Image (cartoon, rainbow, N blue to C red; front, side, top):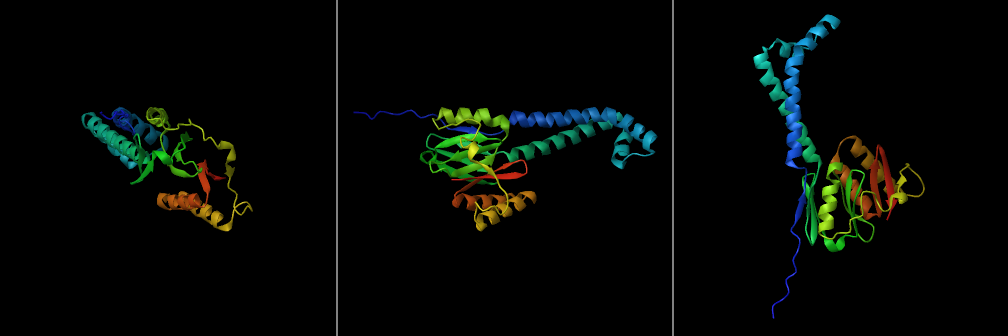
Length: 231
């Protein structure tokens, strides 16, 4: 007797679409193209008003239009490509499979088995994968434009998608240094994480978050404030 084959949904990978990145590049090229026609009048206006103009602006204005158009269009496209590259790097690649989720972000990856997950949702600009014990396996920044694609991918595979608001929203508290409801080590980790974020040291901030997680503290950012929840 043949064993019954259970059909599984194919894996779904969610990332910034290439078309979005090309739009950024084309916008940059378009701005550069327009600048080729505007740079001369702008330089003349600044010279009349301020008796001078920045050197790069004067140099661009001195180019014949036949050279200025391709040169500034190329500069605009290159700037757009740089912006698109930064945008791509700031967003994770999320691979959703029937039995696991793999999140590639910040040069590394997080592998989470389906059985470990009790809640999946977006919280502001964060994608959150949370376990049954309330601990967060993954919290990573994603572009808000990917929320619908993420919802579709997780629901397609039957994951417990909880929407775009943290189910425990009301349990978060704004961190205030030295308050008695947290011990000194937890305060020290939150200070360390705050400094790391201010210095743009992503790795150090992630290390502090991970240690906070092992201590039963979930932390997130709202503006310049850190908010925490005891798990």
